[in-house]
Image (cartoon, rainbow, N blue to C red; front, top):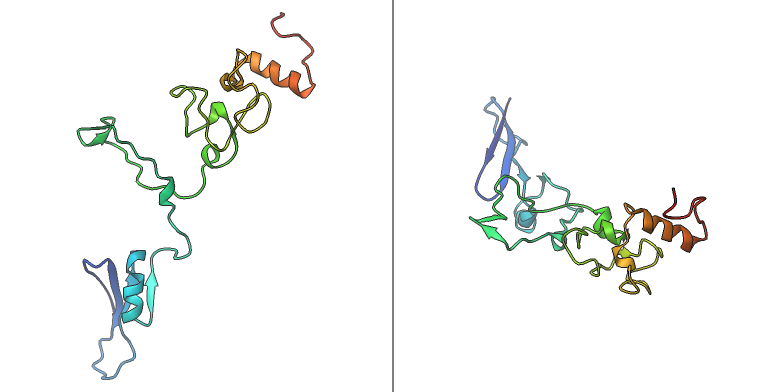
Amino acid sequence: MKSITSSDESGYNEVGDISSSSSIGSPIRSIFCLKEKADTKRIEEIEDCFILEFDPYEPLDVFNLSTNNNLIDGHPDGANDLFVIAEKGQVALRDYPHSRHACLNFPFHTTPHENYCKMCYCYVCDSAAPCKYWTEPEPAHCHASEHVEYWEFQKNLRRGNPPLMAYGRD
């Protein structure tokens, strides 16, 4: 018995066994191996049995794809070594609640701190952004980060847990 595999331009492979015997009426026949989810309906109409090379219950989330319109020489920002064309699953600092300084939708060092996404919260108040002090008085809470000692001190004061040493003393 010899196993064969063939592929064509429609996106599926034909896999089957060929018997070396010349018996007529052999129950052995080809089985299709489907690679593209888009072809499922068409193949279901033709074949009773086929193999899927993908998980039919796991949808590809194309709504969260990032787009970059700053093309240089046909490549985003001139880089030509890596392209993200799809992503699968959740991203913690984008899809779940996160402090404003850790937001992936509005990177802290490249966007105005006043901007926030629907999952951002105030680092000092631990409440959904924007908080009461988001833009004023100065220094506004939108600028808060865990990497700045002043904001850590403010957060502890708000929680009622002042540190043993007052801020600014040695």
